[in-house]
Image (tube, rainbow, N blue to C red; front, top):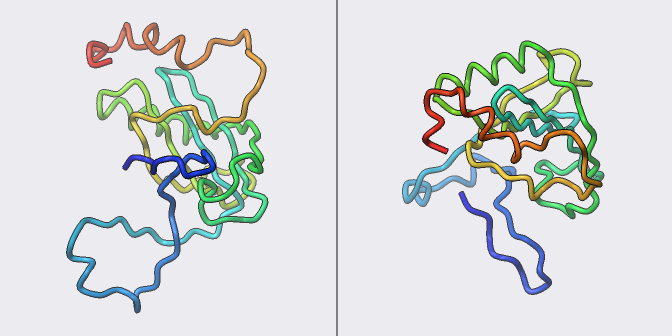
Length: 162
């Protein structure tokens, strides 16, 4: 899905998760497709961007404990680097390889401190993710995902797709 247009105050729009109650369902649900997911009691969210063999991960916390961090004031979000457990990282690489992809943005619900792979619940993979949600920071000498994707893809059989 695409985000919504900016509002009158210039804030970017987004489509976010929200609670639904089965007793409110009626025949109007038959009009279009829907995605329903169980609510996960989480301690935070994690966005993991994989570019070739590189992995960039940020834990995201909404100060108000929002169900979906995209719904609130993005300037109030708390971002912190997080280490992806080795079994999760391996699974992400297998996932991308199975679809012939070299890039993916994965969203997870975190139910603990993040050290245990069992605390990571996969929500989705977006093969066309972007970095607009990241907080502003000083440039780094470390290679960025955008500067290395072609190099990483060069050895990939499906690099011509990029």
